[in-house]
Image (cartoon, rainbow, N blue to C red; front, top):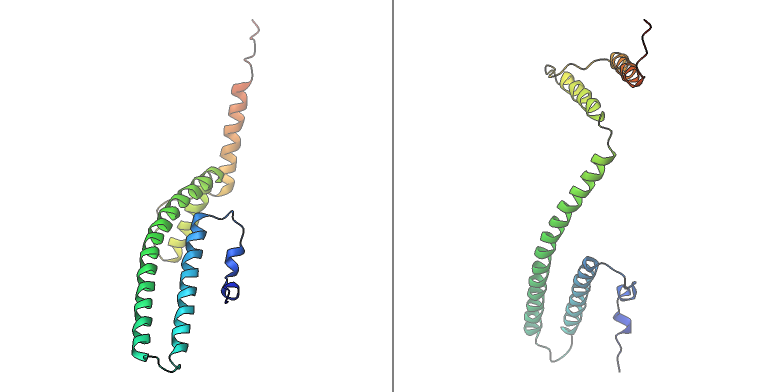
Amino acid sequence: MATNESIRSPLHTQPSGRSPKLRIYESLFLLNEGVDHVIALLRGMENLPLIDKESLQSAVVEIEEVRCDVNADFTEKLADSERFDEGRLWKQRRDFEKKWRDPDDVYIDVQRREEERKKQGLPPRLGVLPHSVVVEEEQKWEAKQERKKEPPRKRRT
């Protein structure tokens, strides 16, 4: 009696804690692998005596048609699911990036964009102050904030 051990896919022995998405792709792979195996068997039977080659070719075409139909149905639904997941995960990644991004990075982006425009021969849209000027202004602002925190001095009369 023949056994299926020789045609068993190694994918069956994978850990069971898999995602549903992986199981779908795996099943689709196994289906296509099985169909390939059936078609190879049928084509090998064409050389046997008493075989109607046209009947075998018809069976191969029918099996391929079913394979295409199943693949199309699965991949259409998978594509919709993947696009939905892609959008959801893109939003999550964008939220992480916003959380981790320094709010002042926008100025670096503006400066880079202005440099790109200059290279393209386009006029500037904004003027970007040199970093030294900004540092001076920030230091003045911080000093002013520190003075506000100090308790008021008593006047002598």
